[in-house]
Length: 220
Image 1 (cartoon, helix red, strand yellow):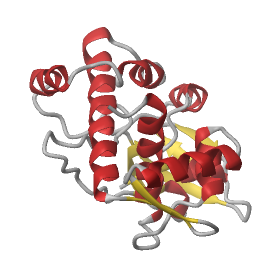
Image 2 (cartoon, helix red, strand yellow):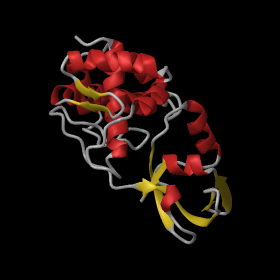
Image 3 (cartoon, one colour):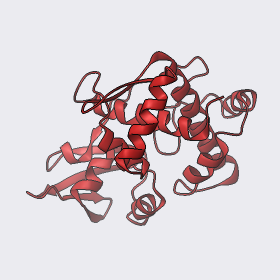
């Protein structure tokens, strides 16, 4: 049984690699990028990557980055499946908001059994995505590809629908909710400036988003 720390690293590496692959096929995850995502020092990350490599869960090349092995990816998908199904279960059954479910799922994902996760999946009628729009892996380890794009890539006049967020921190999600932004809602780009700030129209109101926030919002 992998430790909670190992599982968290595998899950984060998988997510970062998936985002990077949209612009570069089979891109390794850089140590610095992983350190920022995990909130630890690069030295701590390097030590863990060596541990993952020794356990056959990843391949690590100094100054290049890390890639998951087939075994590492299989375990990452298993943990992501648990996490995302728990998030959706908490949202649908206990009415937790999308800014509340992530932290709760982080605590629960390491403790629940595969049997319970499968029963949750069945109870929810085999959902395809979690409250943040992320695809949920199947019991067989398959996960749908996402076809969305960053809001930051759109131009003035483009209409779109919010499909996914890549930042699940409570503060960010609460700011989105306060602005009336939610998945499935339609909007349009009013303007974007040289600094990357994007102004969107939601119904009768307009909202300005920073370049960083616009990159975290994925749309169709």
